[in-house]
Length: 109
Image (cartoon, rainbow, N blue to C red; front, side):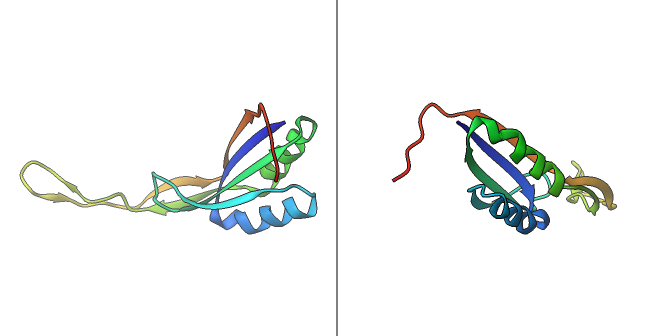
């Protein structure tokens, strides 16, 4: 048994959730926030048999796409108290960050 933690962009979460349901994969869905862009993410917690891990990973890979997005960095204050002008920069967001962990014991009540 494995525990999969999949952190995906909110834009992908509904479609991914539907794919999990369609493929009889039970997942717990949590709303989370990313640290870099402070944007909404969704974290899926999935307990799955070893033989189905790659099936789950393939679904996540198929649904979760990386995108380019413009963001404006926070205003910087230098030692003289002058604010430097921030210009939008293009960053890659989305995709998925996935952790696969071994499970020693699983109980369901």
